[in-house]
Length: 482
Ligand code: G6P
Picture (cartoon, helix red, strand yellow):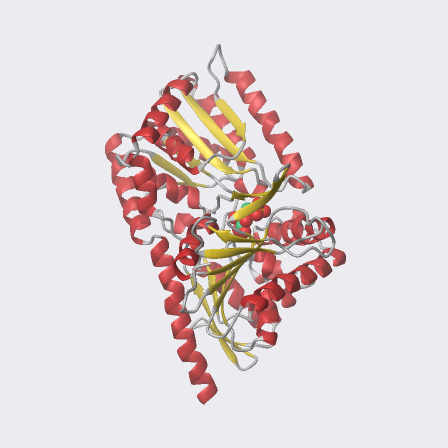
């Protein structure tokens, strides 16, 4: 393992850069593709350290120790440390509390929330497991960076055991208004857990404000709204808003690759229509897939001239299939796709091509290049990096991004055609507008968005954390001196 002299990073998240798959010849690490991985892995590779995560598999035995892998295997820059979870823990902590309570709650789907004491207890237990694993790795001066709603209690567990640990926390999904949050019987525990950190980051100012308001109303803590800080247990916590960026130049390079370009041309001739629309997302009810398909159906109803001339490629990546709401959604989506294709399909023409599968990044860029219109229409989304990836990949400046106003990215991507996914007629009308947009307007809007995505890229995002951390250190010494 390459030795680094400087402080190392202890990255902690439910899912890491690898999922561990059992094969006949042993455990095989399969790279995981996600915004989180592409955002933080370069930092780990540069600074060295450990990534602590669940490997996505069921632990072989009850008290199994987690696997440790050097990454990359041939020339290690950091280590991946598995936190093994039993079948029961996966069910109660991951499927249960994380994805059956916190996920719908934070996305404003109160009717989908189920609050169960056994799930909460396992969430507490598993958060302790992750914190233990992090503590084993941390020496003074290291930075512990914890991610997302699965691990809200980890910062305070670490703080109690190592009061001087430097900690970041980034919450990657929306943070709900406290009226909603307070329906959760353990809301104040979640807030107290997060306040163990030094710096807490959200994508949007409104999420950070929701957090500050929740702290002010549910905890006995002093909140300074002007300086975005909370004073809690003789410590000062900075709460910031930094929308995550992407590696813009990496997407540009991929989009220039001749193999990617010729694959995009092959896709165009395979789907063989005048205008191609594309959607790519995990199969999740928050993504508004059914609503988008219904609006696509209305658009074809109202615009007969587009029938036979445009198709929507809907790529839905399988996700959380053990959670009933996700299984039901798949059936619902398939039924709507079937109906639309039955109503408007003719010969080899299909108005919707539905794929239930993941797609490697390089192939994805070919799809981005092939698509005249990109539909990103979630009912609620913390940010949405796909929208930014599409923008970065459009090397010739053409293409139209149709974006839900309830995606965090809508605050930044002002050149998008903004839609309300709850208004199906309105969305259908804007699909027509997007498909008819002339090249001049496309380029004008795209340039505006490309400039934004290029400027506020992943390096900018990581830099924000460092600055905030340094500012927090100054603040901490100021508080302890006074
Ligand atoms: C969201 C969350 C991530 C999560 C991802 C995929 O983006 O913010 O933390 O990893 O969804 O979900 P999964 O349940 O497959 O990890």
